[in-house]
Amino acid sequence: QVQLVESGGGLVQPGGSLRLSCAASISIFSIYTMGWYRQAPGKQRELVANSSSGGDTNYADSVKGRFTISRDSAKKTSYLQMNSLKPEDTAVYYCNLKFTPRGNTYWGQGTQVTVSS
Image 1 (tube, rainbow, N blue to C red):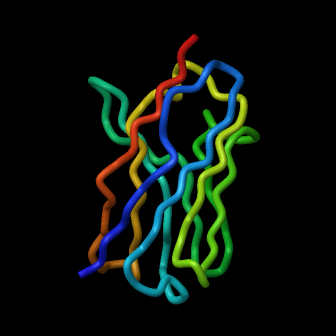
Image 2: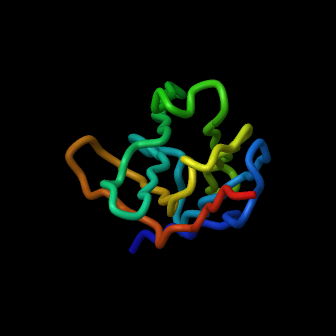
């Protein structure tokens, strides 16, 4: 059973920074992709960023240049560094993980990020 636990969310003022963490219960050395999604109230869940086993990264246009995804396989943890936060970044952020292209997608329980003055 794969478990993903997000942490690091909270309330931050516009222009501030947060770093989200996603701790996996098993090794992530051989993942296919590991990424972050978000869902704002009344909106569909959307991709924020993901990274492949080869190190390729992909970002939503709305966060390019502000957010950075990284991974520490030894710690079984993925990170999302979020800088220059905007009110429109307010959402529940979810970590996800796939081991194969057609395999199961595993999700964490989400962590709330609120950007407000």
